[in-house]
Image (cartoon, rainbow, N blue to C red; front, top):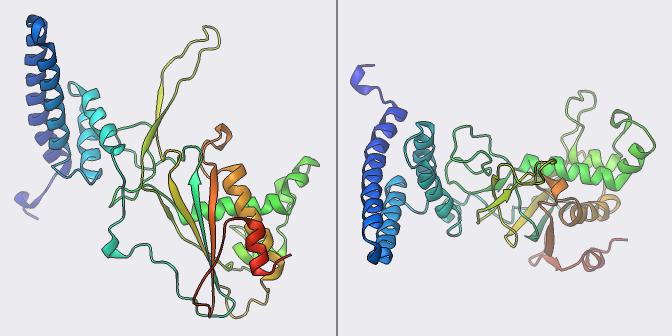
Length: 336
C-alpha cells in the first residue's frame, strides 16, 4: 500500500477540529472582551454568543443533526486533546442528545414484528411498557464524551437493551418466582440451586453445562428506545455532608415508551406443553418490569416500568390476544 492511500482517521479529525476550536476560541474571546467594555449592549452580546455556540455544534456534527455518531467522535477527540473551551463542546453533545426522538431507519426493517409463526405451538409475546424511572446500561465504547455513556447502536446511535440482557434478567426473575429467594434465605448457596424443568425448557441449560445441553424455547429481541436524557448524581462527603463531584449519567428518561418482544419457538422434539409455564412466565415478566427493574443501578430504583398492554400472537389466528392486565390476559388464554 502506498503512502498516499494510508488514511489516519484520528489525524484527519484532529486537524479539522483544530481549525474549528481555534476559530471558536478567537470569536468567543472577542465577544467576551466586548461584553466587558460595552455594558449597555449586554443582550446583543448574549445573542451573539448563543449564535456562535449554535454554529459550533453544527460544525462538530457535520451539519447532520439527526445522528449523534459524528458529533460524538468530534467532541471525544476535542476532549482527548484537552483543547480550550472543552466544556462548550461537551455541552453541544448534551444539547443535541436530549433534543428530540431517535429512530431506526424504517426502510431497513431492522425490527420486524410480528414474526412468522411456523408451528401451532409457537407464540409471540409483545409487552408495551412505559418507564417510571431512568434506564441506564453502560456503553462499552471507551472513547466517548461522557464518563458514563448510554449503550447505543454503533451505526445509528439509538439506545437499546440487548436481547442477551433481557434473557439474563428474565431468567433471574423466573428463578425468583420459582423460589430462589427462599433458597438463599435458608443459607444455601446459589451453586446448590437447580432450575425447575419449565425454566430449563424456556431458557436452556445454564452457561457452561455440557451434558444434556438444551437450547431453550424462547427467542429474545432487542428493545430500542427513542429518547436520551441526563441524570446527575452528587455523592456527599460523610464528614462535611456536602457534595463532592457531580457525576453525569446519560440515560433513557422516565416516561419513555418501549416494548419487550419474545418468541416462543420450541423445536419439534420439545414435548413440554404451554400450560405449566405460561402463567409463571408472564408473572415473572411483570415482576421484572414493575418491581425489580431492568436497568443498571436497579438498587437506586432505576429501570422500573408500568406495563400498558400485553399482546400475544397465536398460530392460525388473524387477530392477536390483547389485555391491559395479567388477570385479563390469563382469562383470555384460559390459564389458571
